Image: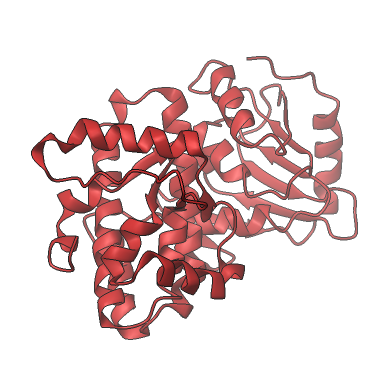
Length: 330
């Protein structure tokens, strides 16, 4: 595929595959888009391998690659998708790049062509996300959990790499393209500053060192999606009376399969809470308490504020009572 038709949404979308539950593109296709040979493209990545974690780039198994070849054969009747067979002499299976990995390529591949092709790729993924939003009622719970988790991660990743993109002026426009005015961005006020809602919760949760308590009677799917930012194996307790009101055991089961190291338990609030709180590292020197103006599942939908509490001691009796409450059963 040459640089002219690389900007065509339909052509690009045909090069996106689902592998291990996530959307990916193959090294050979990306090399062609960016004007490299596959060998030279992969060498550029290897020279910056510290930027490409396992969830950004991974090598396909032979079975996974054969599945992709079969899907190409099924769609090749119109001549739009080239079929490439894996040679029996080939020692190297292709590498797959997730959406985050493709964004990271923008910090590695230099030049005008790389910038233009990065824009085209971002618009392609944005178009696919818009389709998902428009058809969300046709997507099952399990798929919705996975897509929500992926979208939240992408938002945080884009924010982290913005300052290292190829050309700051040009790629600032790329970010605006990806989150144009037609796509609503959700903000809240965190300690007096306007912050994108997902990033605000991510920064709070990932700062926990020993425990996380969430007090909220209106938990939902997004509550779990945001909790994935807690460091692995730090215990999380959610206090709520939300049984049967939009949050179900299946939601938690799907989340736990996706993130087995994120441990969440649930206890009742026994009907005495109206406000919402996040409590980090309770009863330690690093304890922090946040008063939240809205449930995390609705964060950013309307103007809301999260404020860190200065006088924490007054809350200890309340929290101690909560810890003795019975488990919340779904």
